[in-house]
Length: 321
Image (tube, rainbow, N blue to C red; front, side):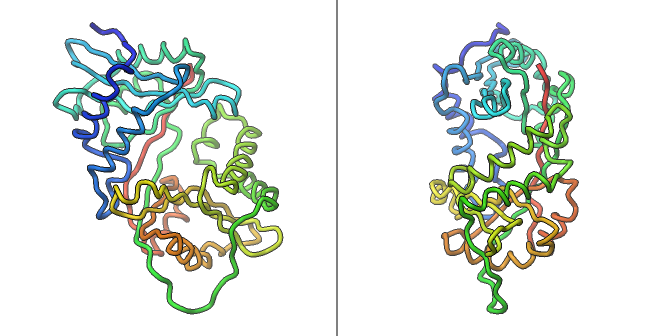
């Protein structure tokens, strides 16, 4: 009792229990979405195959908690990029009723998980937690996790823009990387999880912005990168489609990922919106959502003026091991 055991032999069981009983899921605020399928997609993602060196998923049982799934993973891409072990805690989930335990204390199993992560070379571990998961938030705080960002999700339907003045835009090309990367690095948001964390070095964050731009234009981190149709654009917006899930969700959902605008293109985002809607509709999307920091009032006000609605918030916490 009270020991961590590798969860791999029980992944099918964990996947089924989470898909059937999870109370919330990442996109459950989207009107018309199949919440059952959204739960199932999340459960499948959290129980997918992982390399042994990245697998930090464990089964834990005690007299107090009963059976628990502790689901975390070492992030190989992030670890290689930053040159230190980076991992993410995805969930702590009871495997028998009640499946929501707001007064629970997960400290002991989480302490054991952190020790396992440290033995695997993890130095930086973060968690993205729904505010409804008060038991996990409280336990992480008591274990020394620091809050580094609170995200605000907004959403809304896509509609065909009225005919009127058009603005020249195009999809980004590889030769746009230098100007877009410079824009992303220079337009610092002090409240995103990288800039808000003193542990992260400024030069690493700048390198990360450039890599995101490169990977997005290459189609590996985004499906659409829209820019002003000029020789060296210094404004952009990126979207991801996840078309493989559209039929299951029952909504053709596009997610805004990253955007930045230099001083030379102030006001361009407002001009971009009709053109962006046309591009997303042309790709087959009918609904969109995105996130920013809850502290980013200008973006929140901008999205509200464009009729976007509040979806949910999410806390990001981290601990150094």
